[in-house]
Length: 445
Length: 164
Image (tube, rainbow over all chains, first blue to last red):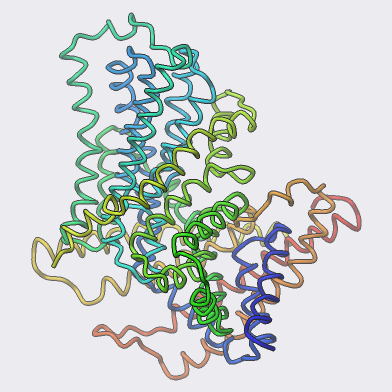
């Protein structure tokens, strides 16, 4: 059997099992075990998998994953976002579309203060969605803003997605974090520009709040509230991002510092008790185990993929191609887009890295640039139906708030933001400096 | 017995979930020690990374119990409860059990060997490795047993039509 046939057989079974709804982690692990013993004809590789378990299970970079999750879970319960939203609601709510813009700003701040996207989406669905519904916002605009802005955490550092990308593709986490900053801020500004245009075009879609609500406070009161609420989050961002980007701490240590910081914020806001800590521990455990088992399975699967000669095969395929390298990268984005419709973010990441990074490397694209582009594609995948993680999240949290939104309404709300994300991909292809500028100056030596 | 397995998975998960607090203290403490006191330790990174391994591996069975392992469920969700059970019976038998049984077997051999030679890591601190390997071995067994519990439930459902 040639390597190509072997890979096609494994790939075929993988698709069948995946689409049948078997958990991704065991699909990857089980197929790795089965193909190592049969198609690869290398039963000794099974011993390798115990080493894989051990190396994934003692990886200091992956150790940052639960730390960032704990930090996000604690931040969600610390009351920092509530204060931030309350003060900005009063200040900017009196403008048309003010709450939507506020949502994007807070999501950008939260994204810079935590590594997971669940926390931002949950918080904004709890805080901003009821406020926007009360003001008679267009549901599609309201939910679309929350879903899209809530996913900025994928790109804006610290980000678990970028940590895993760095660990799998052997890139510096610090550089990826610096690169994600430019692209994340670009997306965040594009979302705000879109909201402004929507207000101009259809003023009725985003009305302002009742001015009487804001008139209760004097100007000084408003701005004191604002600075008091923005301070804890800013310190947290400075602590985590600052310590990573200035080289004071490793991402793992910074995540631990951030966890301590988020706990202190919760303590300061009188939200901390044993119950909250225990809940955060349990949530962290469940999310981490879910992610890490996929990584474990994917690492085993990747070694089979490499063992079958997948890496070389892809490289020779690319070398034989007679088309422009931009056509190839365009095709990769299309494939990622379609994969993202069905597979969740971590699956997309862990299946995509071994397949696409060798191609991109062989074509001479910057590995860091592609890593960030991959993260943008993951944001698209979070919004694109039928498997739109962000939509499920918003629907779930909203129903706890007694707001029922049909999933089709959420999908329609996501479409303009998916278009914006695709526009941002084009912009980032034309101006890669947006990604590469910051890592260039920070890590110049 | 099935409920017992659920309780074990969940209980073990909840106990090991507290390890994250230890990891936070170790890592945050290490950065403070190094930056402010210039006295880094040679063991806290390694200990934290080992605790991390124990932390997430021991959560696998609990996540399975709560059915939270990510699935591509676009088509799966369209199926009736009975067809879901058939699909799960088939793929748990062929894929999940193959994976867990092979890992228990290989991890078991590796663990026994590791204990017999008192294996240690190649670092300055050189802690013994086998406690962690024993943990991984147990984690795979728990995962297998939780999967078996699910398998029995699905089997009873398709044959007798009742949820247990």
